[in-house]
Image (cartoon, rainbow over all chains, first blue to last red; front, side, top):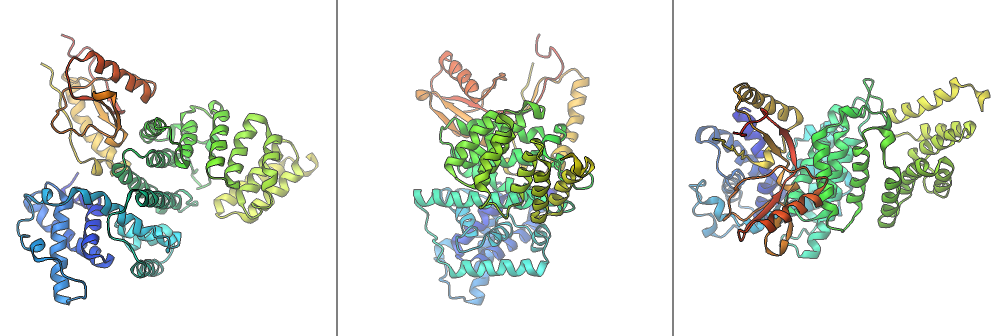
Length: 418
Length: 126
């Protein structure tokens, strides 16, 4: 790996901690970000000459702080200046610096930074955009490309999000235990949103959007390093790893979705699956199940099956039943019904989803799944009607195309066959 | 004489590699592996999963902890490779080792393997 590539990766890895510490110091997102940028520019010059510092994050924090203090002084903003003794000895940034930085702040800095990005005042799309910009350090152009919007629209979205953050009263003191766990849940949800943005890419969008999956995994790993004993964080990371492991098998050459059953399992990434399985294994030992762990356990059962016929559907049914209790939702019941159709047959599954009809009347998957159950029962006219509704509700061309395949097959068999 | 060569690097960076970057690193290392293999000097090579996948078993009260072994006073003295069906079985094995080991203090860290190359058969057997 070249020096420059190493430096770039060291900067990316150090970013959450460095921006988090700078934010604690300056209490302003733009100032913190700018300070970090400045530090990176200096690092690009200094590191190849002097060799990489022992602790890149500490180096970037110290240099970024200096640069920003200079600037703040020049602009004489209203923010109170830091005490002189904190900024006096900044010339030699290398040697005892790592020790001077307070390690206890480290976790809370990163958590605060993540928490700010998933502030309840922000709509989810802004949360994700802000996290990708501030925590991950993706450029506005990269984020815009991933969201399939123009650069100026994304710029606006991020600026608006920052404005809301500035107006909202963000606490800067270290959070207490209860608050920390509430924040953690919010951050986990945000990471999952980032992942889903990438995971739900349509045909032709995969190349642009799948980096979001990788970024979400990086964020999940970051959370896991901060909270090594939180089974839900293990579950989240496991879930993302196992789902992303299947990415190479999820679309065919034309960009059409390939259902898990029909995927070439040799294309699944064994390293990611192995790590996901190890993590969920570890999480279960805690006997504190939560939604991410259960979803990861379901994904793990699919991953463990060498062929679709070896899938442990009864266990998947039980896991969904548990998930229904923890987080009741018609969508989860719908997913459970797929497992039920394998265990108890299509009629039982159809009975299970019948009460959902009203609440899922606008939901593509409801009609896709319903059509598949009806088809299994050879109720062709009803199946055709359900698939028709599904196509009308499809969110992406790939979804519509997938349902159209079913319809075409029905058509080929001839309308008289019903 | 057998030598263990322990690999250290910043985990944040290594786990941040894309598949392509990771493959490139491994392909480059494989040239060295192959050379050692041809010379008949290559024993088992192991790549561990990240420390976040680690579980530790402390000797005191058989305490099980998430995460890697962090007691810096203690040094890595060696490691086993054991085939276990799950973490529980691995921890159970570690418990047996703890009981059998007369030393005080310390403990065992259980890290799932990411990669295992068995190397030249019989190496180190002499």
